[in-house]
Length: 336
Image (spheres, one colour):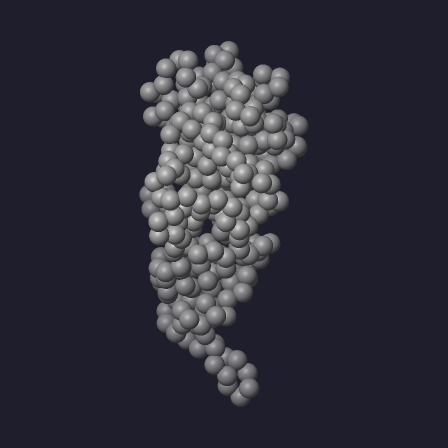
């Protein structure tokens, strides 16, 4: 059954599992009777999910990011985990990229620049951009790399597991000191460096980590620490570590722990706007948007064991013009 599901799967059969880094393949079993396909019952679905237990020919295969099968079991065709149940639950593929997961340690996908990855091969580490190895080095010759992301069409940023990053291309390896990063967000003009609890609370007042967010020009020149803005804004006294963010043009939009607000930072004007969210920001994982709206996606899969009635996902929509917001529960929705 697992082999059949794998061979016959189409994009409409793919969805996400209840746990991070798992993929669900929906499938069914039928036999030919008098020239017509008839459902073939393979078992009874469980009762623990949203749909009732029934005799069924439908099942799912759950596969992890390592390509190993985690589970395979019969389901009610109306179960919300079934990718075939509704169009809203299906994964729509725009581009399909394959790679050797056993060798690729880190990767980044960019709509315009493509696929970048760090590949480990026996005694060497290589930087691969769109299928071409542009640089390699023996293991141990460079600091340990924790992540990479595209910098521009020819360069990537490497986090060197310390206070430094490297801007790397085929011809160039240039180190810059941005502090002990939690995450780095890039805009056409700026680099927005965010820091975690340990870096923030162990830093001295004159160190970049004390700012919670430090902004640098793309050449590494320090531009602004938001501590200066926080000191003048009572609402900002509540927030700590940034949990999600995105850039739009040269704005930085972010969510921070212990703050019920979406913050929109304008570096050039040394100012920000704030919009109150429609519900708690406790588990927001993604912020995105355009010039008129911002969106926050909340992933509650990790708390389902403690709060079984909570939806898997919620969506917050922020109207940046009217400075209002509203929320929506996305019960049948799945993201890959």
